[in-house]
Image 1 (spheres, rainbow, N blue to C red):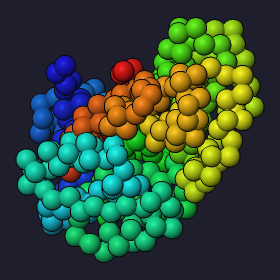
Image 2: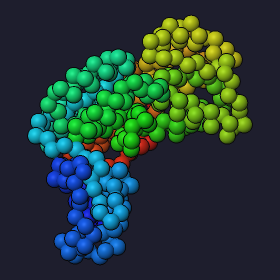
Image 3: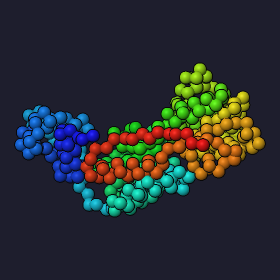
Image 4: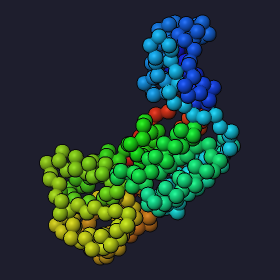
Length: 342
């Protein structure tokens, strides 16, 4: 859709603020000046100024004018983009990285990779390192996004330095208006459980990750599907794990939560594969639905169903949003759907 005149003007003023043409504390042109410069109506100019004020970029002082409240420092382009993920070698990351690099290479950027291993202490070290490195922006996979993050202060420093951020898979709600590309995990959990219910299953166990927000949202969808089908959520059939104790908990509790169940919804393909191996010959008695549709799901025996989302598209969209932010354009989050793949 074509942008309205006030959106065009707000985009132009935002770009001037974020690229440093107008610095923090500087007064923007008055309504009269902008009307004369743009030949837009006073109402259009006022709407554009209202947008910037709502975004927190400007503040209006009665009788004085509109001033830049916050903005990005003018920075020399470095052609480097930091890409911070939890596990670089993780089975789904190569596709995401391919999507990111496809966009960055076209724009003349190089990605600098780092992995937190889903630890906030590692995340802090990486962020401190990148604060001192010449980078233009960052694409970040949040670390333990279901928990309060102790590194929000560093992310705010990147914003103050004029380094835009785009999050993938998860994000930190404590940040002001974060831009992100994620999967619709609540809908995914609901779809996976509904698929099992439609197959005739009534006792469906589940394994979720508790330190990432994806696990909580998939659980919410799983619960909704059971409730909508007139079935109850039984705590005895739900196992929660964190990054550090996944294998030990699954090994010790998987058979226990599956007692009396004919189906299992798993947080991802790695969890599903571990459950299959643990069950051994009994795996044929349990129908499994998982997430990520990776090569693990494709090669598993017995086979299981896995929900899929466009991982390469996720990376590409994140990189495109970052490029737009670097150009001074406003960006909004994107939520991608899951689909069931055999």
